[in-house]
Amino acid sequence: MAAAPAAPIGIASVAADALVALGDWTAFSLRAVRGVFSRNLLVAEFVRLCLTVGLGSVGVIAITGAFIGMVLAVQSYGQLHQIGLETSLGGLIHMSVVRELGPVLAAIMLAGRVGSAMAAELGTMRVTEQLDALTCLGVDPVRHLVAPRFLACVLMIPLLTILADIMGLAGSTFVCLRIYGIDPHHYWEHTRAFVGMWDVFVGLTKSVLFGGVIALVACHRGFHGEAGAQGVGRAATQAFVVSFIAILAMDFVFGLVANSVHDMIWPPNGARPA
Amino acid sequence: MTTPLLELKDVAVRFGPQEVLRGVSLAIEPGQTVAFIGESGCGKTCLLKLIVGLLKPTEGDVLFEGKSLRAMGERELTAMRLRVGFLFQGAALFDSLTVFDNVAFGLKAKGGMAAAAIRERVTERLREVGLPEGVEAKMPGELSGGMKKRVGLARALALDPAVMLYDEPTTGLDPVMTDVINGLILQTRAKRPVTSVIVTHEMRTVRDVADRVVMFHPLARLEPNEPQVVFDGRPTALAAAPDPRVRQFVEGRAASAERGAEKHRQTFDS
Image (cartoon, rainbow over all chains, first blue to last red; front, side, top):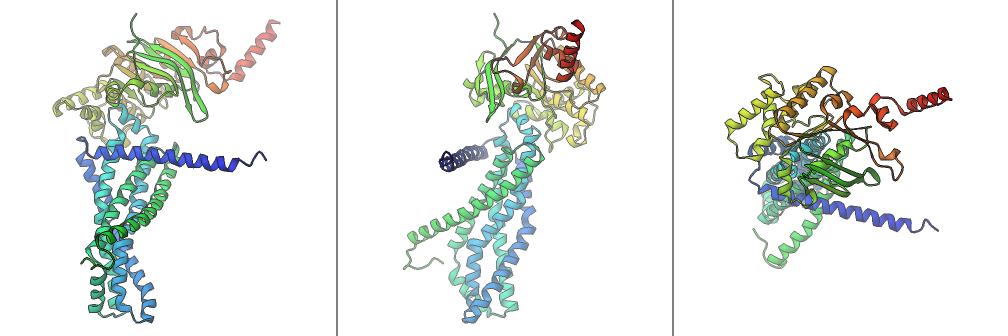
């Protein structure tokens, strides 16, 4: 009998902890974003981070982007070929890549490659008291370390998304036109009919959102990791897992919002933007 | 009566269910060199972090020149921290910066100093801590433990602090390097009117450097109403302290050995 109230109390306690963590992350994020407008933002450090985040991710995003496009073409061709609609593959695949797969793929790669490394780096700085040393020398570690990382991710991720989009398109086009021999004219006509600037805009806008959240989640985990090598490892893992879930959840919400905005501007019966 | 430079008023610190400090009250006068001693886990490093505002007390208050740290805004706290030099246990040098940039970091962040003046100050501080020329260009990973501590000390001294906090400055160093660091602490005190707080396990450091010793005891082994400060006095009075826990620590004996000695004395007396 006495054990009965334990479950609701346990759930309430977990919910309360989650709310406290969300509040803490929000305050941390606001401080970091304010730091972007600080006069003390170090240009050399920012350029180094842009190169690490952007240039360092080019290879992996180009390869995965191309393969995702190719896999999508292989999977979709079988079904559309049976009903004689294989020329529609251009519109279908390119729409998926530009609106969904490009931004999400670039974000997941960034979370895995850059986010985890950021959490581990900052976690190590915390364990070795370098964050405390910054504070003692009159420098806010959040503004000094998180603001340039946030800005680098936010600025670099749209470029990486464009790369993922181009490589996805190239991969799928190669499979469709070269391997399956689909008529190029109809293939590109369908692409032109289905994919417009609005889709590119939606894809790139949400990629900025993903980039910001990846940096802020990773830095927050690094700053609040536990002591020791195990704590640093756990911070890196948590950074990826939390970012991954956040990317997919935001993608869902952003998709709903973008569709509503689209329908408000261009009602369903109206003409589709070019 | 002068205002103490640093004051802790009935300070308690808890991390979740774990209580680290309880009811600690201390006043440190300007110019004093105070050593905090005690077993590992008794909250000595915690006290240093409280003084510089890196930690907030769960209860009680910390005062710097009579002003509560709780009442200070972010700007005031930063101004206060710039008057405090902190030598961290592992030196806490920034891995991605050279020795020069590490020592110059606080000066550059504070601003208002020309590049030539910063260079001169950095060179002067590195020479003061006995580091050879050419070390400026090295990365922290290329330095030995003792050299890291010296660079850490040079970085802490670069801003001409009024208070120096040393967190186990000689831990992990060989006896010769321990002597060198003790010498540097004494030299720092002799060159400028600095108030020092040293957390240490090294009794040689206490004897050579401190003019006041405060010993803490871990809360886990205290009765609920027992004070955490078990000794507060001159280093010379340590050996004759009435509290057996103080003698035990000073002589480096385990508690079981102390109990054995007590039993032996009782048997011998009877």
